[in-house]
Amino acid sequence: MINKKRVVLMTQMALHDKRYGDADRAAFSFFRRDYIYRKNVGTRTGVFIGAMILLGLYWLRQIFILGTDIQTIDVQQSVLDSLLFVLFMLSVYTLIGTIQGTHQYHRIQKRMERYLSMMEQAENLPDTPEPLDEATTPLYSESESEARSDARSRGRNEAHGEARGGVRNETRSTARSGTRNSTPPVRSTPPRTPPRTTSRTTSPRPATRPTAPRAMSRPGRPPTRRT
Image (cartoon, rainbow, N blue to C red; front, side):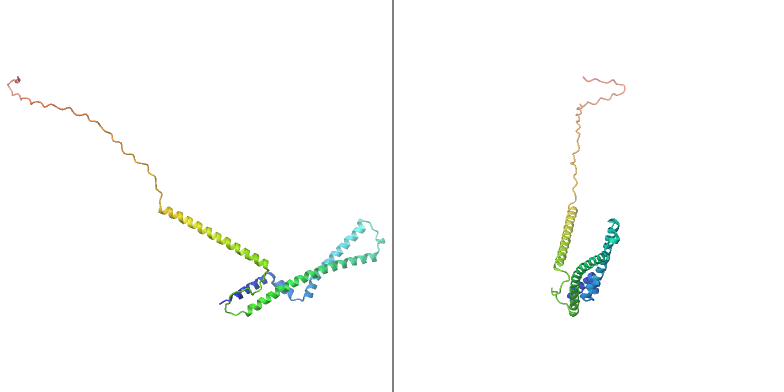
């Protein structure tokens, strides 16, 4: 099985290689004196060029703008003043570059020592898994680690909030759909009115009187009257 502690160390080493790997190895291959000297060479070159440009502008202003006569200029004193100015600038910027280079070299040295210690720990770890502990030296400072932990906790809280909101919405939608399916809507029907009955009044028929049957008259005899 994979050792989790080794995985953590290898991850920190990969982060170091991605951010500072090439620059730290190139700087750590030199001694501190050589590293500072190499850094100051570029600084001194730039300062010397800048000082010569400033001196040229100064003499152009003295000759063409202020109208100073060239024959009245003390050449030795002017050259000496120019050299002193250049040396002063070089000494100041060399001191600044030395302080800055020393600080950078110390930071690189600390990072590389931490990197080498993590590499040694990863090589000496057994293949069997072991519980994680805080014995490994972190690659980042305490403020950076606290900021990373805060960002992770915020992301987890946002994810939990979104998950809870989704579950609540799903439960509400299922409850609504369940109630709709269980109780269908009742349509309101208008009340039925009973049909109208028209009563027809029938007038009673008049009673007929019985009539006596008429006597049949024989031929040749007149009809007889009843008295």
